[in-house]
Each structure stands twice: as C-alpha cells, then as structure tokens.
Length: 385
Image 1 (tube, rainbow, N blue to C red):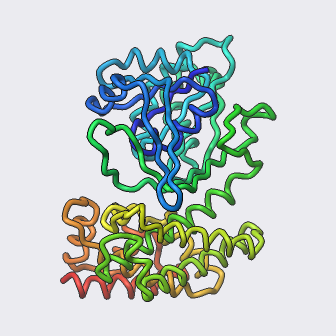
Image 2 (spheres, one colour):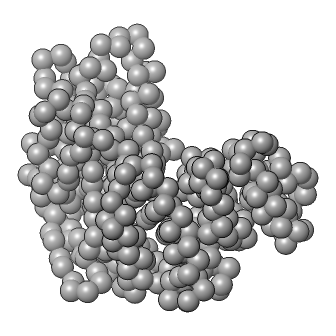
Image 3 (spheres, helix red, strand yellow):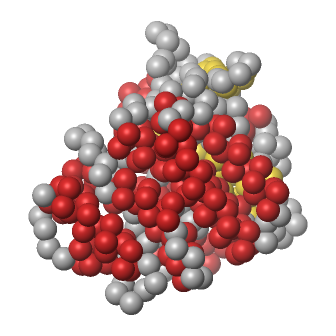
C-alpha cells in the first residue's frame, strides 16, 4: 500500500506520516522545499521523538520524496497509483496542490478503487475546501471527481520549533498527545485501516472541540503571555494571571461546546484540563511568537476567538475571558510576522474602530458582539497610536 502525503514538514513527518507508516503504508512525501525533499530522498529512516515525561522514540522507514515544483509528472503519477492521499500544508496552500491531485485522478482511470483524500489541516472543512478547488479543475469532466472519497478530518498534535541534532535533521520532536478523527460517512462502511486514527459519524463536534479548546487555549496563552512578557507557552501558563486568563476563556468555550454539541460537562472539563497540561509541558518550550503568528487569520470571523465569542454573545452571554484574549491579540507585535506588522499598521492608522471590527473580524454593526469588539479595538488603536 502507498500513501502520498503533501507537506513534508514536521507535522507531515511527525504525525500524519508516522501514523500512515504504522498502518503499513509506503510513504511518498510531496513538497516544493527542494533541500528538504533532497534530504528525505537521501535518508532511509527518521525518528519521531515524544518529549515530556518519559521519552519515546519511534522510527519511520520505507519512504520516498518528490519535489512537485521540479517534477510535477512524478507527483501526478504518485497520486494516480496511491491508496490514500493526505495533506498537511496549511489551508491557504490547498489550492496550489489541487492541480496535482486533479491530474492524478484523471490519470487514475475509472477501474481503480476510489482514492481516499483527506486534508489534515487546522481549519474547519479543509477537505471540503480542497475538493472545491479540485472540482473547479475537473469542471469539464466532473465524473472524475467520483474517483476519490473526500473526508474531512480533525487533527491535534503540538509540534514545537525543532532543535535538530547534527546528522539527524529529519527527526521530529512532538508532544505525546495526538488525535486524528476522520468522518466515517463518506466511506460508506469501508474506511481505510489506520489504527492511529478513529472514524466518527459526526466530525463537527470533534473539530469544534479541538478548535475552541486546544487552538483557542494555545492562542490565549500566546497573546496573554506576550503581553505579560513571557517567551514561551509553558512560561506563560506558569504565570498565575496568564493561566487564569486562559482558563477564563476556555471555561467560556466549554460552556458553548456543551450547549452546542451536548458534550458531557465532566468529559469537557477533563479535555480542557488535558489541554492546559499540554500547554505547560516544559519540554516543548514553544515560543509565544510562533504560536501567536498570523493574528489577522486568528482574529477572523470563523476562527478560534471571534466565532465562540460571537456565538456566546448571540446567546446572551458576555464573553469576558475571550474579549480579554482578543484585546491581547490586538497588541501582538512581532517584527518578522507580516500579519502582525499589518495589524499594527492598521491600528496605528486610526480610522473607525467599527470599520476594523468588520474588516478584520467579520462582525457587522448590530451584532450582539459588535459594541464590545468596537470598544476593544478602540483601546488597541489608542495604544498603537
């Protein structure tokens, strides 16, 4: 069996690639990073090292690599003959890999088994997004799209900035916790065998639980920690005031998750506690600058901060903890992060706070959260001016 995985970075090698290897697949990593692809092609193994607590090492073998920018035909051929295709490239990059997958489906022929395609990204409905890009490319022959089974997923594993050993640059250090949930419905009772993943009838609760607990909490620790002067996430959650702020935000999102999806409150409490313990893992030593990057995306309407805050406000609940995190996010200043630079420039430029609420956060005047966001943005403008 062969699995083609787009994205040969740390998540690709240290999470999805690892689980596909352990499921018995030969791995084909596809990427446009020529030096990384060359290093993978020259290696016969790499290690995934779980850090924090008792160290565990798992070795991955049986892989190859393709630079799709230099040899697109090879990437297309790999998709055409694959048993499974996955991605970990970031949601904004999916449109760039869609042409290779679309061409691979054309070349696959109608007699092969349908190809499972799963985008393993930190975004709601990432596989649906990828499918949409592919469908546009196959508009002249839409039946080709039926050669694939598209299933959304929810993925969760913290992979910090790496400090590779000389000669072991492909090794990946990860936290012990991981979760890969895949919607079962598209497979019509015959899902692929991936022991490290689990298939669920309704993926939405799992996606939102992860997004509004782990991603919201991680971002909260980064932004509140940045304002408090912390360098790393574990340092941030070790500060009583920051930890209290993160807990306040996550108590609010937990309230929303229990109401929206019917999670057992005790189960959600345990999930939230696990997330906080993961953030505190000193072995990860993950920088607040890295975790807080791309504040414009993280402050957008359907993302980890505004979406739960808006839903709570619509239900008549003032999201005090989430608003404090949003205020901190508006003060996130990292010179080498283009979104941070742009956000600070827009705040410093003055203008209407309400216009920024709508253009950055996607919340319109009249919404239950609008006035609170307008106040928070006005305060950030005063600080940036």
